[in-house]
Image: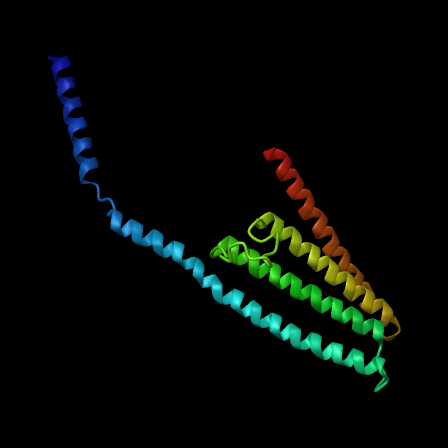
Length: 195
């Protein structure tokens, strides 16, 4: 009798759980698909950021053109101009433009959509192959290079700067270099753990 009662109890609990699982409310597949599609489509919110960076590159182009014009006017003797500082400013501006194009291309391809230009002859070799880790290293390398150019410019006009100002520029540059080394070390450790 006890065994029959236990078996009956077990059957009723099993039936209850089975019934409860069937009656639990699950979101319809249509709602789930719609939500996933909306989340996936939200990546396009990034597109205006990349368009803004393209506009920033145009602003850099204007700055580059103004500096180049000043350099040429100085070389031809129309007014006093420091050639070395001007050339370093041009290099600095070009490095910043390269940094922006790397961010635009890689960011767009990694997070928004593939850039479909087929096998265009001008397609950069690295395009489509730069992952987030590679992007991070390219960014820090460009930032260190820009910082080095700024530091060199500061040393060339050091007579117009205080020791504290130069010290801060050196400290900032060293911080960028150490950050780059730490990023490289963390990527190396991560790659060795995977491999």
